[in-house]
Length: 276
Image 1: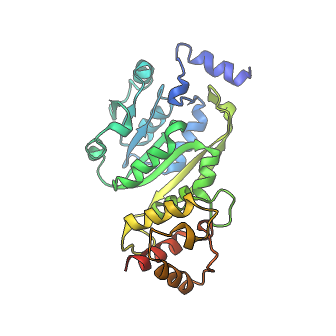
Image 2 (image 1 turned 90 degrees about the vertical axis):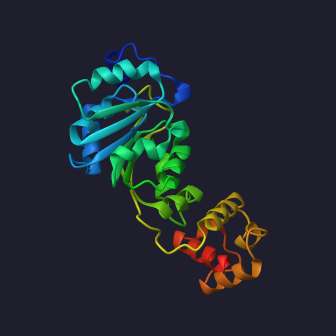
C-alpha cells in the first residue's frame, strides 16, 4: 500500500468509502486550493457542489465563494462534512441524490451565472452532465473532477480517437478546457485510473442558431450509435434522405462521411437543413 494512501486514510479514519457511490476523496488541501482558484470563483460568486463527501473541497469553496449549496446522498459522511465546515455560515447542505432533486428550485437561491464545482461520483458522470446541460439553468461554468478518459472525450475534436457523442454534446453546450491531470494515488481510496479537472464554460446560446434542437439531438444519437455507417445510412428513417444528401453536399461533405468527421457546427447545419 502506498504511503500517500496510508497517510490520507489514517487522517480520515472512520470514513467508510462506498464503492457503489463512486466515492474517491481528495485530501490534498494545497491541490484542492489550487484547483478552486483555477475556476476563477470569487466572493461575488455562488456555487453548487455535488457529492462533497467529507468536505475537503467544500471547505475550499466556502473560503473562496460567497455562497455554497452542496448536495450529498450519503448520510454516513454528513458528520465529517459538518465538522469540516462548521466555521462557515455561507454553506447550505442538502441531503439527497442530485438526480432526484427539484433542480430549478434547488438552484434558485444561486441566482444567475453561478458555478458548479465538484468532484462528482464517476459512476454517474454522464447522467449529471446531461442533467446540468439540459436543465437550462443559468450556469456560468462547470468545473469538475472526472476520469481522465472522460475529460479527454469532453475536450476531443473531430479526428481525435476519443471524439464521439459526448464530445459534440459538450461543445454544443460549453467550451471545454482541461486544467490539470490528477493521478489516482492522490485519492482515497485510489481509483483504477487517473482523473482530470476540467472547466466547461457554458454557452449562453448555441454556436449557431438551431431550428429544432430535439431533431439535432436525435440525429446526433443515431449518427454515433451507428458510427460505422455512413451518415446517409445511419440517419435513414430519422430525416429525409434527399435533404440530408443536399445539406451534406452544401457543406462539402462526402456522401461517405461518418458521424465522427463532423464538427458541432456541421451537425447544426445538417439538422437545420433537414428540419425545413
